[in-house]
Length: 351
Image 1 (cartoon, one colour):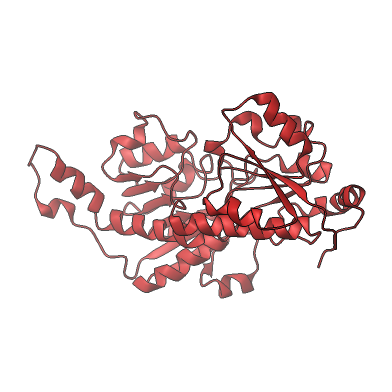
Image 2: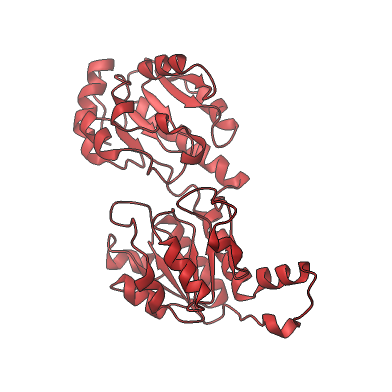
């Protein structure tokens, strides 16, 4: 086994402070701390010698340090990039694959935290907690408690867009309220649907038409960008609730604003926006029946620790010459093996 240390570069801090401490205990990893506020030439000098790049979330990373073609051109020794959490949309995956650079993420580490956030939004909106809270804080008392009559989740149908780690957990948790879970995910098998506890629907339109609550839990890709818009909102029940904890740009915010303003749907919960955080005068923020959060569905002490542990374990696999657990661009593997062998004199193994 190759024991030559590899350089792992990172900015500022890991998702949990113990991440760097755990990584430092691995004799195969030499950590290279970088300060985004520091001298840019020093940062690029570190990247030029780095074998790995442990990223921060997009909102905490300067655009110049997103792994695109221009970035990769300045990192000749780079073997792999690792996202902070499940999302890796700041990475030019095609460019990484062509260069023989692995892209890995920490999928599953945030599933419980995000799924609980979805359930929390469901309950708050269905029970009109957020609407009545805001009413009580205003000076006007031109309402009664009967104006905020909510409903239970019992017996309702949750429609899940993307039945991955988060989606399947949403399906599981919804069963505690005797809800029916249906899902649209064209990338998994019928057996996957059965194992993950949701009934399959064959189209996105069918999902929006059938569900009482929509939960968007798919990644942002070329296929999902702009996937949800006015056509889908028009199919929802007037009592329907739309919730997204996935990524901005998957849903059309202008169309959602119109659907809420016109009363075509009952409420919405948004943890993600195209611009984050959204401007204080974003039109969705004006509605009492819209609950928002600053892309923090997965920001819990539990989740942050999980992401750090997942990342450290996966870097241990990569630098030991093993196939990583959550590789997102397997087509890069053959080219990567050649580069790894040229650098360290031993070829990685797939199992």
